[in-house]
Length: 305
Image 1 (cartoon, rainbow, N blue to C red):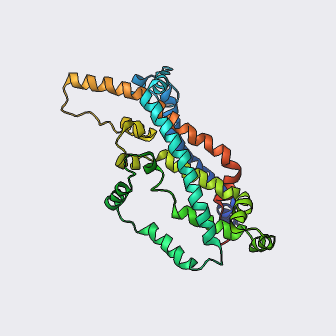
Image 2 (cartoon, rainbow, N blue to C red):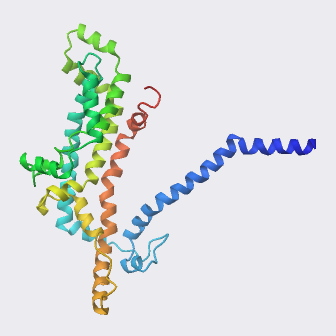
Image 3 (cartoon, rainbow, N blue to C red):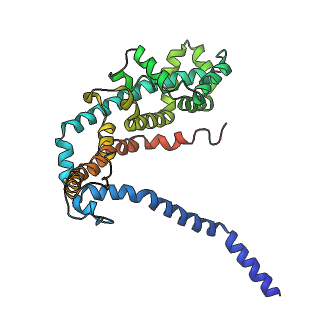
């Protein structure tokens, strides 16, 4: 009886130990990693494979029939290059506008001496849950003369309320009020304090905002779908969308039509995976530039407030 009780306690200690938890947690995380990473890996190896082998399902773990025709067509296609340049411009200008609007608004909302701060916070938060809808927004954009222009891609989404609240919390917990009082004694104005003191001390949250806003602009296609008409202004994501939404073959197709569709799909397959890889490069290249401050920035509010 005593040996059985002792054995039971040992088993309980084993299953309740931190080591067992770590092992199970590691196995689950590796499993999730494989589920998430394999589609990305498949796109990469498919972009270097023969399109016929990709369509026939012969590509699984390694590239088959090394082929660079997709990348050649991507960089020789004027529509893709134009869309690539448009996306770069939308992302760069849009992110700068986002920061120019979000950071001052967040700093103002973080000041305890701002009159009506609670009411303004509720006003901003209200827009996160209730909106006018697509048709009223379209009418406003048209009345402002932004329809089918460069600015329609960057002005309507000039600020994210959620990002503004993140910045406000950062300023409240990381910019001491004593610092403002000392600077005011030395004759520093609010504008100079914000530009010369607050911003240099806020590199972490600025890095997070740059990454969040830039990724949002780079992946955006809905505004272009609704507000843009000219192909010269279309971003890269619209070009990618046109390739990815091509329909599946109709079961009523004849043999000749099926052969034509398969030929067309091979042409699309050559470009599709290569274009996805090329479209992902700027975002992947942006993260290492802000990684130093990003880890600190994403932990904002995890301990305080």
